[in-house]
Picture 1 (cartoon, helix red, strand yellow):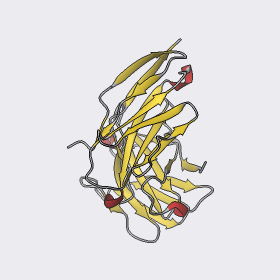
Picture 2 (tube, one colour; picture 1 turned 120 degrees about the vertical axis):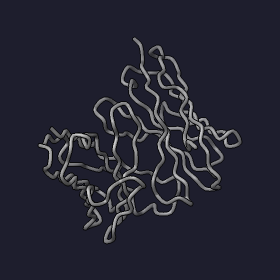
Picture 3 (cartoon, chains in turn red, blue; picture 1 turned 30 degrees about the vertical axis):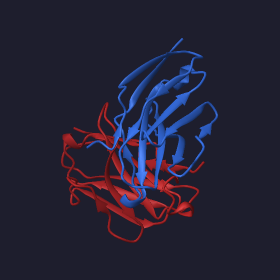
Picture 4 (cartoon, helix red, strand yellow; picture 1 turned 90 degrees about the vertical axis):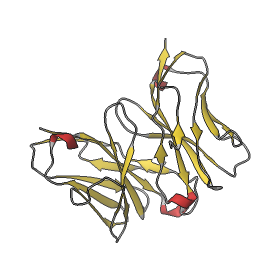
Amino acid sequence: GAVVSQHPSWVICKSGTSVKIECRSLDFQATTMFWYRQFPKQSLMLMATSNEGSKATYEQGVEKDKFLINHASLTLSTLTVTSAHPEDSSFYICSARDQGLAGLPADTQYFGPGTRLTVL
Amino acid sequence: AQKITQTQPGMFVQEKEAVTLDCTYDTSDQSYGLFWYKQPSSGEMIFLICQGSYDEQNATEGRYSLNFQKARKSANLVISASQLGDSAMYFCAMRERNYGQNFVFGPGTRLSVLP
């Protein structure tokens, strides 16, 4: 199956610093990538939809100035958590949809392994 | 209103037995997809099985099968011959054609397989 990677897998940072998380589709092109956040013992919550070459679409309640998303190529999307605070500590997961299956509601999203962010 | 409901926060099953994880959904869209993902303690989301709303036959993938009852709006996951490695969180998700490309996830069910 398709492979999506994330880097780093975990990161610890001081409050006020910025953290960049990369999401790559390794063996397919992804015009659309998604960023989710998951708090402990909770489900995944969509943060934003990232489209290659255009601005990301953010879900209600997600600050776009705090969570900067860049989708510069068909295989790479980045999420930057700016001026991170302890409440931003969470598990961040990206997913990508295979461009070849565009338009099918049952086409699959492939998830990265996630990045665990801890802000001290 | 919740789009995806998973009423079982936790389930136990004996090794080698079958188990059904419930999922009901709410949509007015005619075209949608239903998915099941497994999330072990490592955190990665592992795709298990999917069903399109127009698929007439229930999806099967190895030990996983999806019991799709369209009229009831349910898409239960059946795991046959449970293994210890099946212990994990299981999420049901839906994607509606009229609402873009993103998934909506249910709250999840934690499955514990007992030896």
